[in-house]
Length: 301
Image 1 (cartoon, helix red, strand yellow):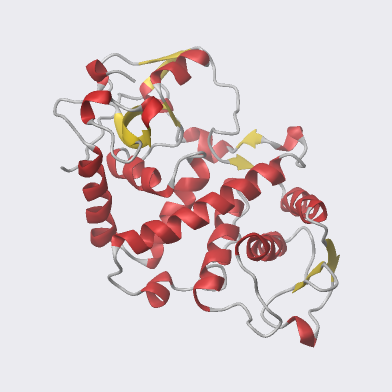
Image 2 (cartoon, rainbow, N blue to C red):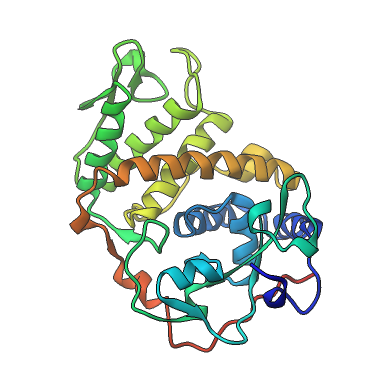
């Protein structure tokens, strides 16, 4: 990603970090947290920090890659399209921007800023639409690979705060498998298994609940099966958990943990979902206007 395509003015890693800090302070809210999670479901492979940066510069972005990445897909960046600046490992950065702790500034473009060959669906592409039953089945296979059985039924008294019995190595979820809420519950329990060491008496509350619920929401957003009527039943109030004006680094740390675990769960679940189900969501595809006038990112620096 060369310097000739970078920017009208030089942007450094510190500039990008300040932009993220300012955006978090300016827009922090429960709804904004969910928007960032939804964006991370689309912008697969990007860190939480880069998700914030991409949506800050190009709010409609759904699928970003570098110039060479688009070329490998038979597409090219439209002449004059302004790149989106992100923080990337030193192998990808604009060397004149200067590395900071092994990272530097890299430039990517959204699919709407490219033209060329018809796009073939990719695991790094936009959100797909999958039936809730198949999402649940994929997650059940992920649980099986971890040595847990998944059962339908009511929660017992000794499974307070969640449906996972770690001693018997089973996960119990109430409801019908066609209900997206059931897939959400299973994703929530799998998030706990990957993130937390809960004892029988510790329960699911506070930041532990927020992290697991956020992972589950991100996963369902990726597969296009988020239940209707979004409420604190899906994600507890993040403002209530971490404060109304939290330090940007705290939000980055929380977001980084959630995005990383959600990404691994999504990758694992996708391996068990029928290929025929992995289709672009029609509503989502309408937002990818390949013939639209090239959008110009704005960092607000």
